[in-house]
Amino acid sequence: MPKGHIEPGESSHKAAAQEAYEEAGVRGEISQTVVGSFFYSKDSSPNRYRVIVHRL
Image (cartoon, rainbow, N blue to C red; front, side, top):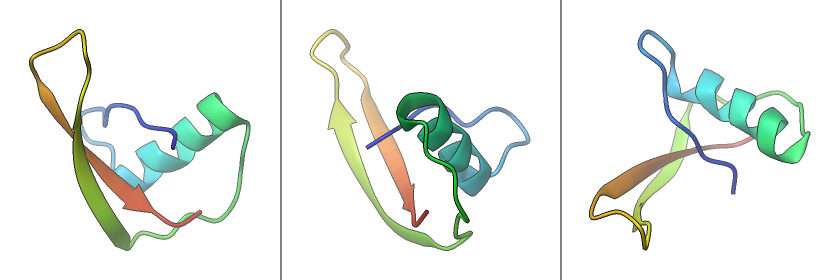
């Protein structure tokens, strides 16, 4: 699942569409509705990250 950071002033659905293209080469119509979210941790970081999921 492509994931990245939301830039200041950017919506989560716009960020999701951009990440899908950058990481997977996929373009499409993105839903503004959040369909889910989850947290994960990277082995190299003590931080937890929240991922917001949109349909594409």
